[in-house]
Length: 263
Length: 191
Image 1: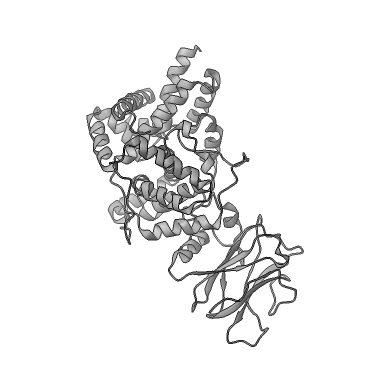
Image 2: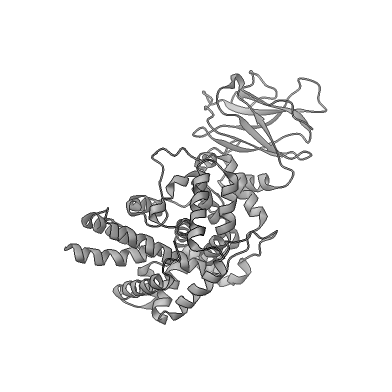
């Protein structure tokens, strides 16, 4: 195939691709044709950009949808769950936007992968958290439930630094006067021997030292996000490692402990 | 009205600040493009709630990996909208059968009004919108039809060929011609 013919083929594929109109085999063909043509062709890169902008114009032609403050706050709450990833090259997908000559393999993978249920907002980004549902395995929809919870006014956050100061803290999102709460965090080690993490709270009406169980959780890939049940008013939170099924009272030293929580 | 170049420069700066974990920059980007992103996703998936999830995913992807955006590969707006479109199309093709059933119920009823204070969109977008609509209206009907089916309905070229009972080559050529015209009509507006 001549370079000129190849370039003509590419423009058709690039234009259709900008509209996401290629079928799987077409994406492969685009990759092959690009490889034959030369993946660093400046003209092709310009075509990718130009057609991506033309496609974006089709979006701008639509009447903008209403986006409420609630959506904005929910987005920011989700962002706070995970910091910006390091900028150094990693094995994570690099790009899926327009003009991405080198991303065809990634896009094939994206199109072939199974879709995480739609309510799992940010599932591809917070995949560890999605996988880390605990207490009992929960569907990914729990993440959406958590984000909705976190976006509600009056939600407070209590952090529990890891004992010894090493590792990231766990956080409990709660609202005073309500028993529903969520615990989330990253970089947890998985307890060995089927043991589990257990969250405890100290009710403000309980005797000193009397801790009540709030829920069990086990991290997956180091991440956890789990619904727990805390008292309507508490002044201390802690997490310990307990035998399978949990305990009625802590049987080991806490591995995460909050400071005094204002009521 | 903000000139496109200034707007784009501002967008680049916002993305740069995302790399520093700047929440205000993230909020600004969402306010600029959240509305058009949701309109696009809603047009494709036809469900407001689902569209919002897709938009949230797309913006969080940028938050998580701002380095995924490359200035030499197009505009920030184009990048965000392409990400939203990819995800919406991924979903709609996978859920096609279910979506068809749902649409038959009453598509209008599924597009729920959002509540709360409206987030403002990018300044100057309204004027640009009118220009693009004019360009679309000027396209030959057969080219416009193919572009709209592909972009707004998330249909692949083979699906369109089958639905319109056209040779695949005809769909390809109409798409190319339509996109060329659109590209010329909007000039450098997208950058």
